[in-house]
Length: 406
Image 1 (cartoon, helix red, strand yellow):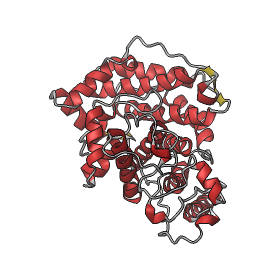
Image 2: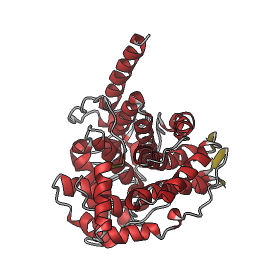
Image 3: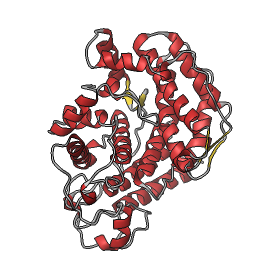
Image 4: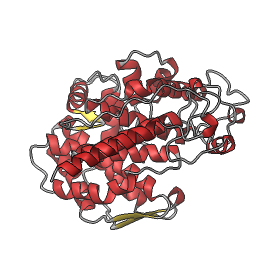
């Protein structure tokens, strides 16, 4: 009975590889980019905890905090003082979370995201302090939602599912694999992830880049918790198709690449998709740079998180996307810092908003472990420490990833 499933998985992997290697835009047909890397299989045995943070990383953080070393101690104190670490927090689950554009209407959207961040926060607090009250609070939050939620609806449902679905597996991995008190509800929680979250995110958005990247982050984290190799491979294929279409390199040619399934067929369509930017002359330019730095930062953060999880699972995606991500972080950090004025032909000479607390994971991987020079990103990161939460899907990354060699 296993043979058809094996053949189906093999065919799925071949199709995913072909999609990732294909440029969808005829306007880019004259380019001759390097062939996309072959789709690698999911790990034969998954590493746990293994979504964004590993046990060696957690042990490093625990040791630094207990030693009172900076910036980790200040980052922990910030986290512990936040509303997400409160032991009196009461979960607010809903059967149907309805989120319209910009969370209007907002029926459970904020509650779901923040309860998921709180579950992750208390899981971190449990590991670092050994105080079982934090583990029990994390379990309480996860059990409350897994007992109730059935669906996400309205226009922002895919993005909402991606945001909350990125935080839940981080918490679940830490609790299931490090808390000796046990978690009887872990099976029901797994069912929630498989039945409510994964179907919403696994096929991507085929629209905005930060949407699809956040959804892919959720998909790969869920795949690790469920030990679902097919879902993991599908998420990696999405990632490999989307990252080159989200961050531009001058080696791509006169136009950015198009993501598989995006339906961008002409130069005019690509320019509109890139927020009206028609000049492509900067390594690290993002599809959303001219929208605002905050949304671009969402995309960079999800890219970093996916690569970090893949590295923990023994399939390091950082080398494939290192040039794009380091240039993206550096370009946006440079202009946020005011190192240089924004050129007149870049977003009309003005950039809006700020990146937010999204640079630690990428900086640690690319500069700390891989040795890339990232002066502007380093400077901005240090100015923003300790990095807190964006209240969506990013939380406490100075604590978990600053100078973390593991």
